[in-house]
Image (cartoon, rainbow, N blue to C red; front, top):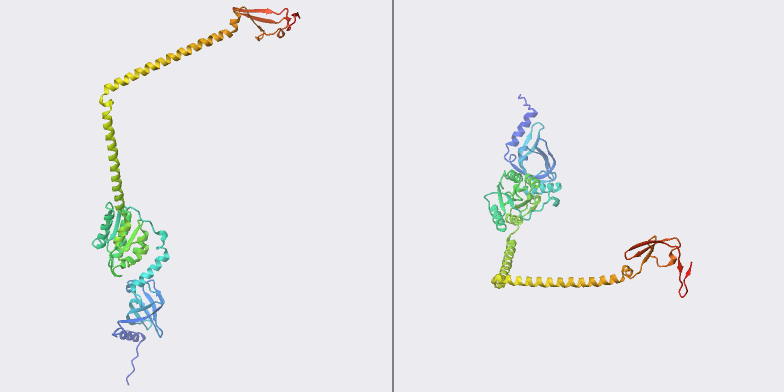
Amino acid sequence: MIEPKIFTVGQINRYIKNLLENDCILNSLLIRGEISNFKAHGSGHLYFTLKDAVGAVQCVMFRQYAEQLPFVVENGMQVVLYGSVSLYEKTGQYQLYAEFLEPVGVGVLQTAFEQLKKELEAEGLFDVDYKRELPKNPSCIAVVTSPSGAAVQDIIQVATRRNPAVKIAVFPTLVQGANAAQDIVRSIKAVNQWGKADVMIVGRGGGSIEDLWCFNEESVARAIFASEIPVISAVGHETDFTIADFVADLRAATPSAAAELATESLQPKIERLEKMTLRLQRDIQAVLTSADRRFLFLMKHSVLAKPLAYIDAQKQRYLQKQQMLTKQVQQQISQKKNKLEQLSYRLQAVSPYAVMQRGYSMVTTEKGKLLTSVEYVTIGDMVTICLQDGTLQAQINQKAVKSHGEKESDI
């Protein structure tokens, strides 16, 4: 009798695992479903359940595949999973081993774009308060782009046409490919460290969303936000929008438009300068013409035509004025002298000393007061008698009062 073969649990799990992994359908398939029970492990592996209306299956995506996802996996997301079916021998549970995920209905890159945009907007990187004004007339513009692309030529041509004096500093940068984002960040930091640019243009020409994707990377967005120099984002065509456009201080539809925004056209100033130059030339010519006429007039004047005769004439005028002034002064002196003599005669006529010469005298009291009445003195008072040639001291021994129309009486 043949005894039945007994298998271990591990042997059965390994057998089933081999069956699953060698199945041509199960080792490479696409499955559509909704993500639930999502968990990102600290090791970098992703664990989740993929389900639909009638079933569910456990899934795992190892770190080497998870790091390549351009978007963040979220619960409720409808995806198409590419991978294989295998068995986890330790638990005997089969599961899907995912190598790639793609959102259903929306492209992978578009999903990543919307997720990063939402995250950065929530952090405030798009806020208007952080936007800086561009300098009106920059002396130097830094351009972060490919040195061989058409975009850099457009920027240089437009900027120098609008302002021939502006300096353009090109920082050669990768703008497409796996290492482009890292190179853009490096160039932005280099421009800030250089410190001689007034404004920075970051961008490239048009392309597909894959070509422009480096400008949607989070590292590029944060480098633009951290820049101390104002940044103009000029990526692709007018219809292309990237994360860099939202973070930058100003978005330009094209690289050429960025050059226009970064510079101020000198043509209006040149035209105004030309008009001012013509006006100044006319004014100078008018002044020169007037001066020439005045010069010709002066050349005909006697001062320049016959200088000695002019000097003689001026000398004669001076002598005449001198004689006239001398005559006027002498006349005034004579008039003042005559008036002084008249006043002197009048003063002598009313002077009390002139009266004294005729035999009169003037009597004053001891206090020097003029004595005009006998009532002002009494017997025994001392008085002073002033004559024309001196004074006498006298004492009143007697006085008599004479009334009008009466004989004088002794008192």
